[in-house]
Length: 457
Image (cartoon, rainbow, N blue to C red; front, side, top):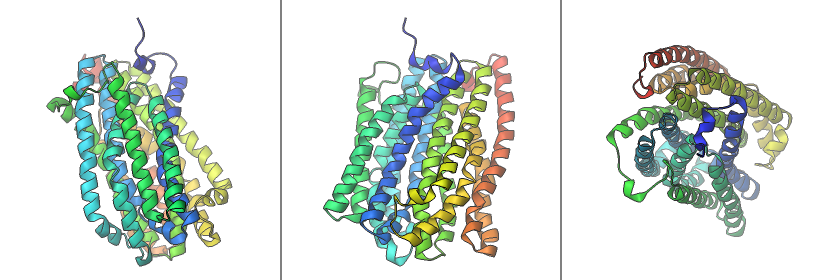
């Protein structure tokens, strides 16, 4: 009998299995980042600093909406992986079909709300008058792609839970190439600037969603998608939302806290705003490569927890924490050493590049410390705990950042004092998350020892 693909998560050496699982996800995540990065690169190189600033001014809001959908997809991943590990195909199928409806509706709602409140949100951020027109055009068009992005994250969560991280990578590769080509066509060929790069991203998002839909529809295993089975199971809905909503809200609230940071950046001149927008592309690049390891952490822990394999649960966490920290440290070193070359992808203006280098140098010393927070959150979610980690993040990182902006930054009012809040908030929150995971792990393993099923543990 052929061994199920997801068995690789519950059997064999962990380190090579986690690396094999993570690499396609890393590449997939990088391609998603390249959607927005290519937008900024093309407008920065071919439309000028104002278009760069306009698109860059929306980065926090794009993160707000997309972060929520990525968090929702992570919840789908955890529940699907749990049932796969427990070898319950009917529950897997119900989870998949319920989640397809939930995520698509979430994307539609985000599009509607975001489109309606775009001007108000950009005004709240203190977007410069010279940039706000282009920023509104870009964001409203970009938001049309939210339903597609939601569906892709649903499909990615389901397929990665089953150990299939290669197909999503292939689909994003196709969409990513299309996105870059359309960016160049619309901006250089048609002179569409912000609207052109936004439209290119929307088309690419729907292509990636369509490809993942076709792939799921052609599968004949438990994660296969069938039109006739699309209905919401109230039980699976509660399970998925119980993990997905806190996960999505954490990402969204995190982005809201970052709105205050963007507002702080906006108190400087336009050159600093544009330099920050160019350098901030490194954030998404580093975070999303690390996020692949977090997805692996949640998937491996959830499946092994479902299978009752307690030793692999803890080992998965330790390996993923070490990998994510090491990856961030290496990437940070390259960004610090080759920061000017990196920034040249997004701007030809020397003053803008100099402003961007300030952010790269400070953040390059900070990124790795986010691993303790985010990897530990993923581990807790793999054990079915999502609400408490979200509350810890809100208190230890989000609230802390807002307080920092109105105290430390307000006192010194230097761009360095603003950027330093990242490493302090990550370290404080990471320690708190580690203490919670330790407690959570002991409780869940004790429940397994009593014979309690993971779903009710």
